[in-house]
Image 1 (cartoon, rainbow, N blue to C red):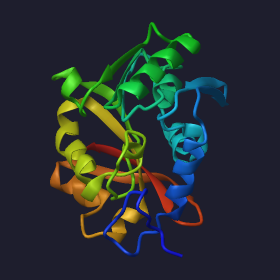
Image 2 (image 1 turned 180 degrees about the horizontal axis):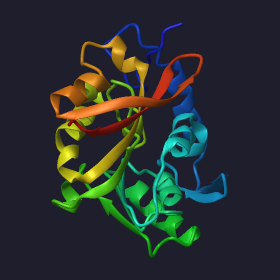
Image 3 (image 1 turned 120 degrees about the vertical axis):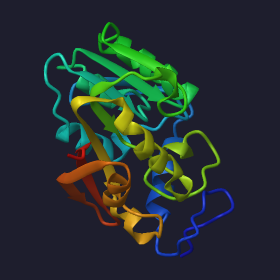
Length: 233
């Protein structure tokens, strides 16, 4: 069965099976109105067009790997509904959430209020680090789009990153936003290794960073790895 149709993003790599992502997007498209879900005690108000962390393996898996200490300042990049930032707010002093989707930002603001953490969360709409200038953080959490496809909607940009351009920009800029001793928790898929665009290890080496795997989860079509990343010594 072909994994492409005229209504679905395409990838130039024939080794990448897009059918699981297609099913994931279809599940989202079944929600034409707002709805609520709960993940480990975090209540989420979801708007149509916003990626739902309950519909995938990655979000909760990453949340369970992140360690935030009291009084640390956290950045949740690619924040979407705000789920990871809200989870971090349980122990963090302050959390900043950034997403490029205005709908996701509105969703995150509602969810901060729903979970009584508005006083801890700053939420911005913008391109990567642009909304925060030169600010630095103790912890940066990143759940970027994991497939090298070509998105056609805001929802699809949560899944598809053509040629991993967004991820590579993140790596080029992220070190300048870490406090001394700061660290990054990033989740990625082994699908990147099926392309000729590089790997997390390569992106780290090119940008003065070191990484080690701290968690791995296999599903029937890919392997997710959580990377703990630091500035190289």
